[in-house]
Image 1: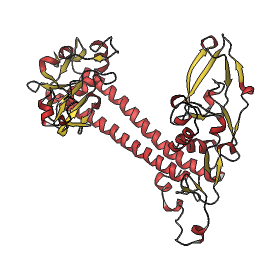
Image 2: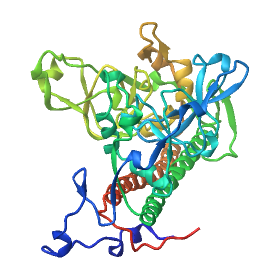
Image 3: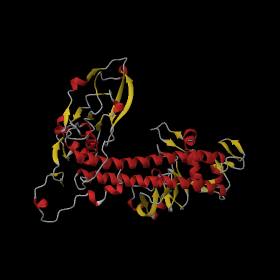
Image 4: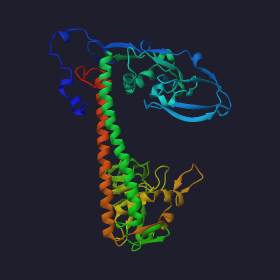
Amino acid sequence: MKTLDEFLNKQYHTKTPAKGSAVLQKERKKLYGNELPEGWEIVKLRDIFTPVDMKSRRIRVQDNTKYMLISASLYSKGIKFREWKFGREIKTKTMYIVHVGDFIFSKIRAKQGAYGFIPPQLEGAIVSNEYPILKLNQKVALQEFIEYYLSQPIMWRLFGQYSRGLKDKSRTKVNEFLEVKIALPPLEEQRKIVYVLKTVQQAIEQQEKIIKTTKDLKRALMKRLFTKGLDPNQPTKITEIGEIPEHWEVAPLGEVSNLLSGGTPSRQHSEYWNGSIPWLKSGELNDGYIYSTEETISDIGLKKSSAKIIPKGTLLIALYGKGTVTKTAILGIDSAINQAICAIIPKNNAFLPRFMQYYLIYRRPVILKKYVRVQSDAGRTNLYLGVLRGIPVILPPIEEQKKIVEILETVDKKIELAQQKRKALEKLFSTLRHKLMTGQIRVSNLKIPTG
């Protein structure tokens, strides 16, 4: 298999013809502003897809029969299993069966990339008449090539242009869907384009596996470190928060730290905003470090509100917000905070902020279940300051805290590196997909494995 670097090597690119050459003088086909290579065709989807006669797929849903229901994920993420249901639980009694290799799309969500081919594991699933069924002519177009081609965001926008009806209820009909044009290389070049894109995609999946495996390792490490300490053979004791090393202490968070929340300057006074003071909202907490904020406030905004400037290195925790409550961060800059954030400042160097951050992340499931309150109005979740003060935390000797932080930060760096690689590969995939699908990068000379 060729390496990614080899795919980008000059030998796989079409050389730009010299100005005035016969190639440039010859009229070239253009699609969506892109000039296409010789030998490529511009076709409508109706030239490669044939609508399936829905009557031939129609079934009458039976109450005591179990059916597989599926849905089309947005943004070209494919067709996914949804659930199994007995017929009596399905309101629509006329449904349509799909087979491997069928292409279906959501009439209402085609403009958001809700379409794809039926994979083997979804054979025999059923859909409503909101999902037209099409068959691809694989003598002229490869399924995987079409999957990659239609995964481009430009295609979603094109399907949106053909949607009819009210904005939120507009639908793309079969004939409208099939009117969209695509660029179609010869079959052999389609095969090579698929090979290149699949290779990059496999590299992305490899990084995702590394990220998942390393995160699993981190969870296991945290459990061991926060219950057994650095030496799993040392004596332990059972406390109100479970097993910990015998020489560690447990104390309420409020006894070993000062807790401070912030505030928000009035939005009615423009002079309070866009100043030189960073101002942090709870939604920006990321369980890591914060080096910049989305908004800033002025000196007068700080004076006229309960916002407080918190020094660099301070541990923060979100006090409320669905999906946000208990999120943490370490300030990498001096910054003011809003009222939904609590600064946790250790007393007498009782703990390292980074250590306590790791511990609070580890204990998050317990904190959410035992200490976070859900208000009846709109279901807002709160971690009240008084409750936060009473949460018991562990206090190993500082030297042990340092070593635990070093271990976990080493794992975090591995996760971060894999995430950066994944992001770079995703960017490469997007760029390659566009350039390969428009003929800006050619793979005509690429030799790929057969069979």
